[in-house]
Amino acid sequence: MDIAERMSRLGTESAFEVFAKAKKLEAQGKSVIHLEIGQPDFPTPANICEAACQAMREGYTGYAPAAGLLEFRQVIAEYIQQTRGIEVHPDEVVVTPGAKPIIFFTLLALVNDGDEVIYPNPGFPVYESVINFIGAKPVPLELREEVDFRFRIDDLIHAISDRTKLLILNSPQNPTGGILTVEELEAIAYLAKKHDFYVLSDEIYSRIIYEAEHQSIIQFPGMKDRTILLDGHSKTYAMTGWRLGYGIAPKPLAERLVQLMINSNSCTCSFTQMAGIEALTGPQTAVDDMVAEFRQRRDVMVDGLNAIAGIQCRQPAGAFYVFPNVKQLPLPCDVLADHLLENAGVSVLSGTAFGKLGDGYLRLSYANSLANIREAIARIQAAVSHL
Image (cartoon, rainbow, N blue to C red):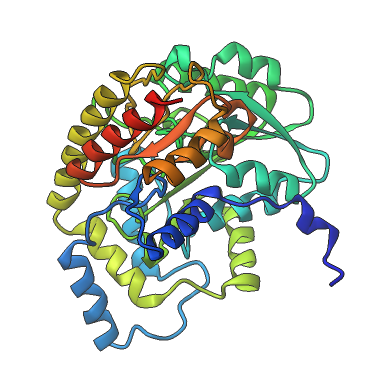
């Protein structure tokens, strides 16, 4: 078939490919511990599920406005005002089926052919994939292990050019779990205003932070007019399959995001949005309990990996991933990931799944039980001791 050339520029998300491979091995009778997929292993809280059921009973089963239900956008605006300390109007909120469309739509609506987009590397693979797809130039910004997987402001300064249109931030980060400091965000805000570029701030893990408070680039003076804030319900409320995300954008851009919604998805599921209202306004105990459990799992995984010869693992400050350095082991990280799956029954991701600067690392998700994490560590230790 004569496929359009542009499709050759579109990448993939390796987590789903590795997950499918692991499930195939399980179907053949092999025991596999899943540490590859970025999905909380907690159930969606019961009050949220009941809100969705009640919404269906009340008739929320038809089309919704492309921007999202007004009552949901009002709740999101209030939530962002409370958590980021800025005023938000519902017309600046766009609801999407999952948060990924905000990445795709922002790049489509804002970036021209030949414009440069600076993005974190290693980073969420969709960033680089879509930058390439739309014909822009991806400019990687290295997340450095020696500074807890943040980037250096000097590196950002050197990456900026007169073609820079957009900077993508992700804090807390996937795959490293690193977070940006207030001082760094303030410096980034200064550079954005000085060089007149926009910022797409991916804050999908904003509620999963362990020893600090979440800080957003949008809170700094002058940044609301040049920031697109991305958040959603998938991670915080264990609602990955519900597909519920949103963006906060300056109104002229928000209108373009709605235009793209009309031309692609029409709208986001109505009863899912009603459940989203309950998630933001209802009890938050389940979120607090989940984060406390993730903290315990993180500590067990980090300690366990650091006890294995040839592996060094920094303690992540947020999200639910670790990004251990495996450069002292005799296998390339992609070969090592295959070895652990096929010979140890532990499914992890190669650091190169998140960009070329992830070479020499693995990503492991601790969205699994403590018992499985301990068993996975034991299997990894046995597997690498024979290399």
